[in-house]
Length: 338
Ligand code: SF4
Image (cartoon, rainbow, N blue to C red; front, side):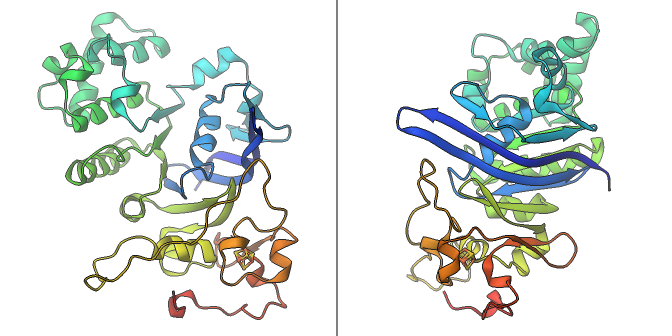
């Protein structure tokens, strides 16, 4: 498959009163045309900052995109493009669905105007055509009476409907890449399932590439082709959905998967949690960022950052366990005790 976006050595910091928060620290991965790539990890691991950088939404200052960072789209590092070029790119090449539709939608404009605005910003169409397209978009995302919905304001819709409207706005510019930042977090489980099915359906119909940002492993298992696991501003492991769920190689991925509640748990059995807290990104550790919480930590882990080790296909993990001299080289996480 053809790469549509390539992120290379992305480093983003925020300058605060307390000091420089190194939110994203050398992240590299690529997204292939038509696939769904999920970025998973705990809150504060840098997944949303990565997505915002791809959309050109990092405010500088207080943000700073470090020199050498690259986001390649159509053979061009878009981090170097002008504000005018960003305006053409945002919405028409790459769109974003935000976490909370109620705060992301404009409360003073009706739904019709909000969708039409995105269409007329990018395409030279008449008001009548824009309205027709807006109605079609609402129909595509499963809104029962699109013509009536165009006249409504965000507060008049339910949470699930608002999220569908957000998806319609994001798709109205016909983007090649759709970034969904925790699209189901604010919704209840039944609506979550509907939104995930809708995204799958849209991808089938339009061939849109999806970058999904989430901490919900259930959502990921349902929709992702490949997964990038992030921790502390870095990529810990990346691979196909099957490799990450059934053949993970990184102790953090193993801990993260075990921390997800399962139906197989005995009654009153305690849920597994990862002890400790993520490191302070104002003073990140010099070795592996997971060292303090890792039960396999070796002396080298706290001193030197682990390199990336490659396994079958594109499956990769940053961990010293796979050094040729490591005693754990043949570790099988499916047999490991919690
Ligand atoms: Fe654990 Fe060391 Fe691997 Fe980090 S590099 S995850 S501390 S074994």
